[in-house]
Length: 77
Image (cartoon, rainbow, N blue to C red; front, side):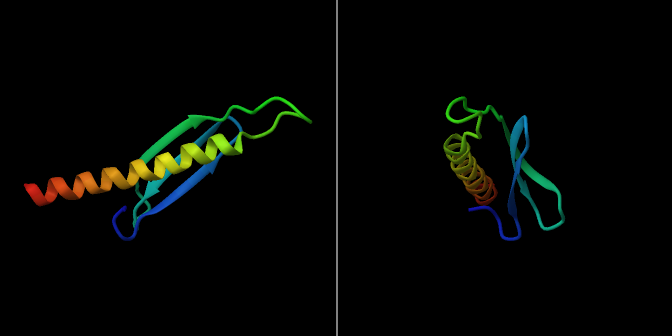
């Protein structure tokens, strides 16, 4: 889990999707991004909601793991 006072921000744009981890001071602590590629097909081009959801959940997990790793490193120093 990220340290208290952090918030995850999902920025869904036309060409890319970004996931930011922001601290209480508003500083970006971590950042992930992926291309936003629409899916073709009925009835028209549409957002890959399932793909973004998978990426978002994996990204939140990565943020949490990095927070655990940083905490572990501090405890072992």
